[in-house]
Length: 128
Image (spheres, helix red, strand yellow):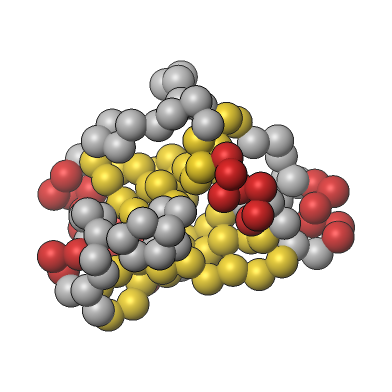
């Protein structure tokens, strides 16, 4: 069984469902230092342009999750979990008007997990 690089808490799933009802399909991009530092940012699918140097880490609750290739180089040994917390972030992420913000909880992969990680995809992901 392959290990995922990114996951999501139940609390974050509730917010994703709420945002999906209002905005349609969603996507995430892990910010690399702008605005909220290193916050996961939620957009309507297609509103954030994925470039040839963005890495697709997988999906969380039906949403593609990306980060820049440079940032991935630092985080490639880290499992990420998207969660929510009260407070207003300083980004363009869709949850901000709700008075909450997404955040990342992280841990290093165990050696056994590293051996089972799937390869990552660099660049935009084509619809199947």
